[in-house]
Image 1: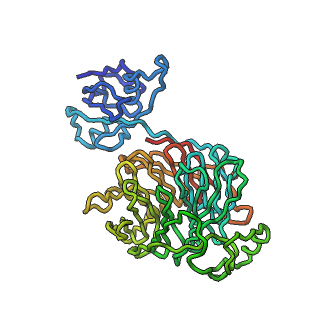
Image 2: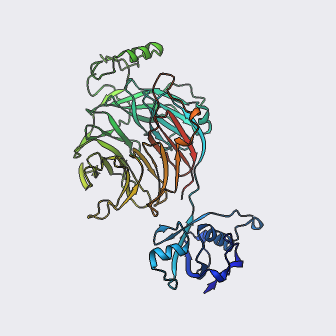
Image 3: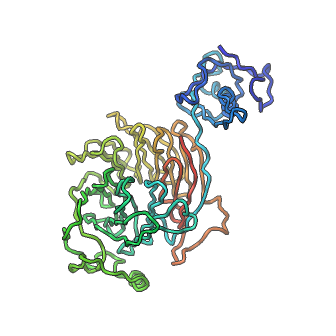
Length: 493
């Protein structure tokens, strides 16, 4: 056994060895680059995360003399993050048993988010995506899509602004084309107008001179579109709606020559022919799109398409969708009816159903890429984890929040960390191994009141509720009723 005397590391507490008991601890990690010699160490019971992290760095020789920076670590006992001293953990979990060895796993810490910029938007932000490295895709209730380069996002210089042919607002957005495709890129927005609008942009080059445009208009829903997702190939798109249905579309490999359905009347929805729309069109007249005028009352839009399949099983609004990260022929849905369902695209059936409490309306869903666990944000102020691999399992873990969670995003490689946005205007980063408290919280309430806008230039009243968040493991973005997109450096593990 290895006895770690107090003088072998710094002693920030100033407590002498004689007055503090020492506990047998087995320190281990799954990271080969951070591993220290396997042994049982006798460690002062008063030590916390800081002192333990200092010990690991000293053994690894992470110091200036070796040209290495110290690395902050988190420590896990029985899968739960150590938040106090070792002594307190022993009292809570072992009844003062100081002789049994404690197995302590250490992992690199998730660093606190650092805000790097904000982008003002002239309406509520409804959707965000970081799926393309270096760019932010956003949708807003101003009825448009915008693409912002991350390198210049704080200057509000949009690379593209793509207006929807409706003044009712965009509710969500997604990239469709794979990130490897750099020309004729497809992206989409779901709308309050019950349609999904698919756009094509020639490239992401700032020197491009070819105009983008709406290529397809996807019909089939009878309520606002709440969520849209695209397959990894970029050939299929799925939309969920407040009508409780999920529509599946196969996008044409070549541009079609005719519509699949006739046009709808100009005033088929409130707001399509109102004063605001006429004013906007007068200020920003749009040229009709060639080939799309066959008695189309609006004169704008893409080739009208109908769904290739409709999935119906939910008994309430669709809150969110996510494509399965292990099986391209499967996707998952979460609904206001409190259930999570898995769908087999090959067979066209609902093959997995997990029914939670009916009052646990699910507003969003994502999946951990490392282990397949599903996470939902709910109206009852919780985040729920669903282990669908167990046939009898419903909700395997619940994280408490202070308000409803309309958007969340799991870390792209970790099995344990996720980011959430809430109606209270708070962004939280969680480690599910420590479910009682989030690792970090960032709140818009912490900003100076005099710096905050009350209304947008077009008179839209701003609020505090966040509606969208995305996290690629390096950068985190969030936005909502405050009419801004906040950008943070947020490296997770």
